[in-house]
Image 1 (cartoon, rainbow, N blue to C red):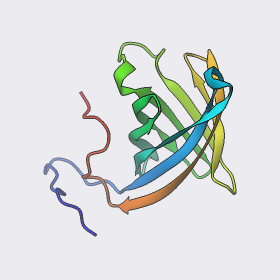
Image 2: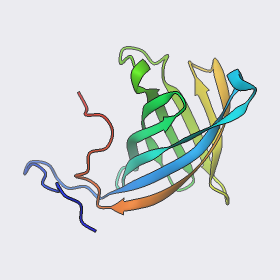
Image 3: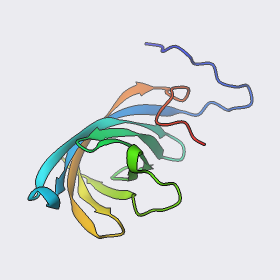
Length: 139
């Protein structure tokens, strides 16, 4: 199904992209290693394998940016309400490896101060999603 708003400026070259859904959990040492659910979406640039998108969990909406390779998914997550562009202390780094069940990995927050386990599944949802708005507008 075609979606509305596919017009892009004439000076911008169309890039092959795919919109993905993402859903999973991460542990939280603050809550006795209980798992916290999350879900959202990201757009994958098929040429350079970069991703950008949004996920939501108990603590709010977060923007994500990273890479998806054949067997590895890596992204940085920053909660919108806590984001401070000038520092990296509010950035959470996620690293996943592909498994038969989905994507399994770990995260590190505040330069290794807090770490935990994480698991997710991803699925392509919309092909040719280049003109679709994904995430917060860039400054």
